[in-house]
Image (tube, rainbow, N blue to C red; front, side, top):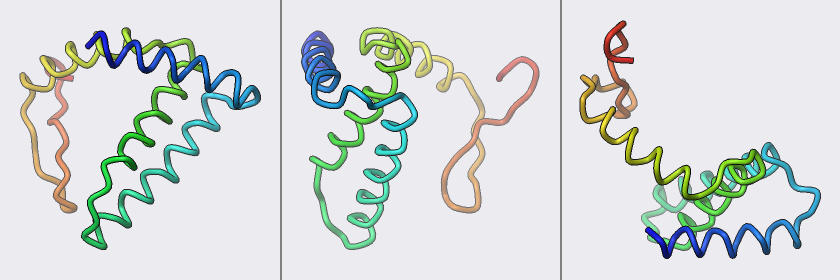
Length: 106
């Protein structure tokens, strides 16, 4: 975990210097284009982990520009995993899954 946080801190410092006018929203827009590249690779049967890394960098960049650091995201990742494991899930028509919402299990 320390390695990913250190790498992200290095990447974010570089990003702020290299892309000074980027915003949380512009980085999120870049994430959408990276996700489209990943989708195209999946459709074409191509395996490119570097595209997943690009997408992760865009997500971290958006968060960082919103004042949310990598350590905070990792902490919440752990909390959300625990929450998600306690939820009841239903399959959607597109083969994605959503948790069943109720007052005690949001």
